[in-house]
Amino acid sequence: MDIKNNKYYKLWFKDPWTYISGAILLSLFQIVTLTTTNDPWGVSGPFTNWGAWLYQALGGNVDKWYYFSSKGAQATLAGGFLNDPGSIRNLGIIVGALLAALLASQFKFKKIKSLKQVIAAMAGGLLMGYGARIGFGCNIGALYSGIASLSVSGWVFAIFLFCGAIVGSKFLVKFFM
Amino acid sequence: MGKEVMLDCLGEACPVPLIKTENALKKLTIGDLLIVHIDHSCAMKNVPEWARKEGHNVEIEEVDDGEWEIFIEKAK
Image (cartoon, rainbow over all chains, first blue to last red):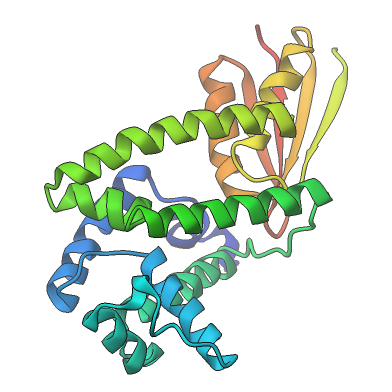
């Protein structure tokens, strides 16, 4: 029998899961993350460490940087990639997303449409990365984990995230439509 | 039978395909067919969802690995 027509293949691998099942799984796994690593789920923080390791590999030094000045940050950097749960988890997200796309046979190299798209993507990435560090978290660490920890800061973050999204959408419609 | 319009949204990420679809559909008249070509899996969910909510007839066809054509017949 052709696997493409198999009911369970379609249900589990091909068709998108519902928002509800995604929400339940995310909630369960962020609890697992908190109990096993003693830190709430975060995504952009480990990327900052990746940047620091890359900079060190090129001969740079971040010892004097305020962001990495705490003992904890120094210990994480000294421990390396394999001893940083957040880094392993981020790698897992990337590999898992690739696997999901491959299993659904939806993997595709997408063409870059225009120079405008490249510039917007780089500007957006820089702004998001910079904002996530200044705000001590991204929409996962500060918003999702903040709210999950019953912290008011998560809700404050949500309000301003929403304001930013409105402004960003206006720019998007103005320059990309 | 209305006219057929192709909308190329390959390489575009959310929410660009949805907004382009909304704008393209505004220009069409009842009975026209809009074919949206996408390769962004989220757009495969939100474009048909929006069009169905608006009351149009929608069909999705997977034309290649990670590539879809969304057929939207303007119904009102």
